[in-house]
Length: 173
Image (cartoon, rainbow, N blue to C red; front, side, top):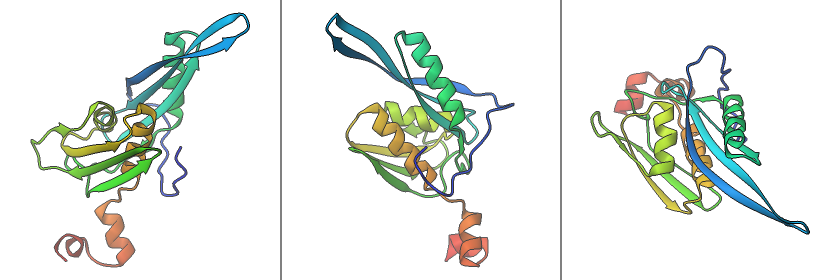
C-alpha cells in the first residue's frame, strides 16, 4: 500500500465492511477517432472497528469503476489502533501535496475533519478526532496521506514494550 513495515494486513473474510465512495473522476483520452471517456474511482472500506482500506478502480462505466475500487480496497485492509473511539497520540503525514494533521479528542467531540479525511476516519471507527488538511485537496493524495498518518500510530502497549517500561510510566512519565 504505502510501503510501511509495521502494517498489520487483514484478510476481508468474515468482516462486515461498509464502503464509502470518496470521488469519481472522468478522464478523457483523445484519439484520432475522437474522445474516449473513462472513469476512475477511489473508495474507502472499513468495518468501523479499526479495520480500513482504500482502493482505486478505472473503467469505461462509473459502476464498474466503483466495483473495481471496492475489490482493490478489500485487498488492502489494515488494522488501525483505536483507543476509546479516538487515536492514542497525535500524528501528521505528507503524501504528494497533501499534508494531514490528526490529534486525539475527548469523548463527545465528534469527527472534526474535512470530507475526504472524515470518510477515512469514520470507516476506521474513530468517533472523536481533530484534524487539519493543509496543502493539496486532491482526494487521492489526501486519502493516502491520511492512511500514512494512521499507520504511523503506535499503541501504548507497543511503546512500553519497546522502551522496557510499564504502561503507567508511558502515560505518567
